[in-house]
Image 1 (cartoon, rainbow, N blue to C red):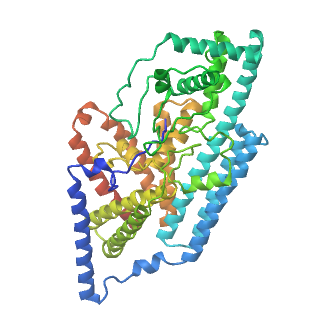
Image 2 (image 1 turned 120 degrees about the vertical axis):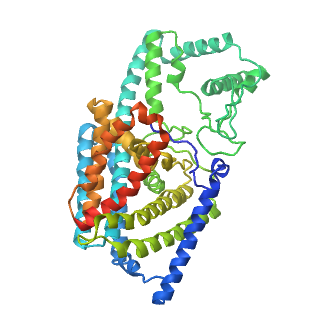
Image 3 (image 1 turned 30 degrees about the horizontal axis):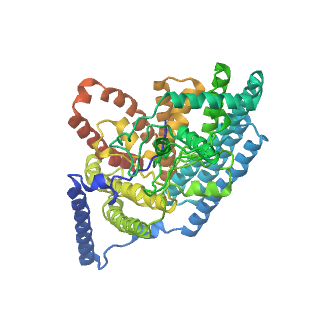
Length: 535
């Protein structure tokens, strides 16, 4: 359900599709307008106070900075214990089902409870509390994905060994392992010889990655043919040119590669892959089952990493650096780090943060609502500043930080968000605006509860929303030091709103849906601020 392919973020200036978008000028206009607005704010402040800003917010966010940095370092380093834990599971010292799962969840609970307790004891302001709590959740999700994936692979490995033993036993009735392999090879070559390869090259699909080529021959069959042809050439036979050309398969797969590179695994086919062609139905079925299990234990991109070779500190550190919350044996990779790209995202980060700082210090903190203020006036005063702050914070996290870390970790899948601004319903918004969290919830909550507990799609969706709402409310409780359940109620209320939004009459009117979405977003931020601050 979750796959990784090379993609660029929509606001990346190197994205060809975004560069040709008809509305790209509005993107430029947005930044120019914000810059002029910030400059005019600085000028007015200098005329009034003699300073561009009073830096009250700066003194608040810098409070106890060293302790915060050390606390965050301890939090990150603690996750390194995942490696020996996963190693113990791979060695069979701990059975993941169910001993490993219990230990994993107890450990994650202790770490999260410790982080929350530490945050309360330090009495940090809301910025530090929010950052540390959110980063704790990120680390919990990374830990959970890493351990649950490796635990599942350990179980798959055990199943593969059982099927392999059954396969070995089944081949005894065919004269033994080697005899069964020879018979399967003969059957495989006969199928290929009976199905002549069409001449020429099939057309490359329009949506194929750059550098992709196609062939009438399956890649694994091409590898086998290449080996047979090489063996015949060594015996003095000349390989047929058309078959040799057909076997020269090259594709970019799911990795960003130079045009002259190859991403198809060229290692010899395994015994199970050969035995899939055996005339015996029993042997063929067992070989197919074993092949499928083995593929689960192999990296999905190039097939170079096989479990448990991935369980190393180096691999885990690379995973921590990669901006994703879902662990895989392999990810699509870029070939190099572009220093200018990293510099661009760094400059964009500091420039956008300066704009965000200006908005928060000038137009949000001075207007912090109290019980004595008018509720409606507070909503009107805070609606625009909160919306601009939200857009800037979104750009900082998903365009600057995620892309920067993706470049440093050679991570090629940069789709950290979709066009959420065109959303016509809240379920569409929840899928599009934060892709890393969405993919985590999709794999480890939604799909997991359906497969493990046999829940229906509706029940799994409710559990996913319930968990997400509880996590968001926990963050608000830590930041505001209040337990009010306002955000929890608003998130749970999205479920009936999603059902209403799926009605045909409403789904047909996309403009109305988008208007309702933006009005809800505009009202939601100041409403939560007034509710938590004043009440």
